Length: 71
Image (cartoon, rainbow, N blue to C red; front, side, top):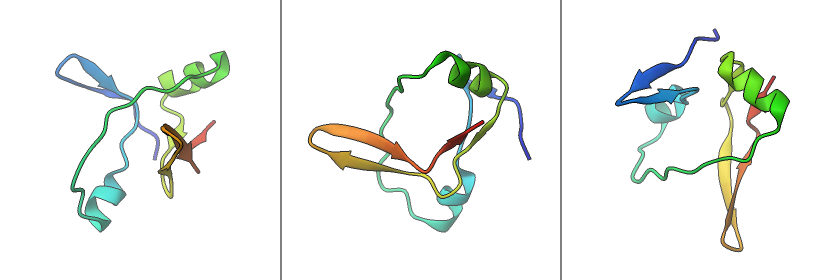
């Protein structure tokens, strides 16, 4: 089910992986930005993002979002 983003303290949340919060104990959260192309921005604004089975890998002082699907 795709849903529109919601606003939390002035910031619009585009997508949240609630299943990960249910299945795992989250010990630390890190906030980061992404570099997006024009079509990706349009899709995210429309709420077309799937974070199921996605994760972040850390390599040489850089973070990579893996297995996220942006339509």
